[in-house]
Length: 183
Image (cartoon, rainbow, N blue to C red; front, side):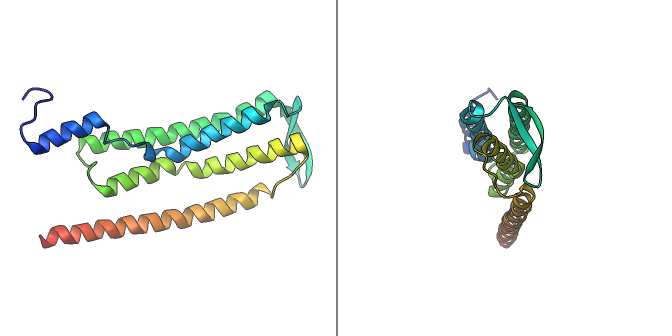
């Protein structure tokens, strides 16, 4: 068989899917990329508004540790980049595996890849909140709610959403297996 020459419709569909990039979708990594870009925009907007030494740690409402604004920007953007990269890597590896084993036509696999790639958005949201809290305090002397409350809320909401997602995926998978067994 020559490369790119289809023997039957099934083979032609596989080649077309590979050419169109059907195995990897941007929806698999949408949230990590958007949150990383949002973090970069926040850093650019607030950079000139920050003093040379930025307070980043608070005992109650009193700041007690400071660092240079370049260092705090790096400390806040590097983890965002790393988390976005992890989302891309997870989705990319999952797409390669599903391509190799020809699993990409399954909605179950697509949903799982989307969940796995976007799951890193949960810690990204927490980092964005911490970034915004630090920036607002240093630029405008405004404090947001304590970070631990945000962490608890994000983790609870994330657990609920992921639980619903996995329950629906398992239910859908179970239904498709029943249909296959009936045929």
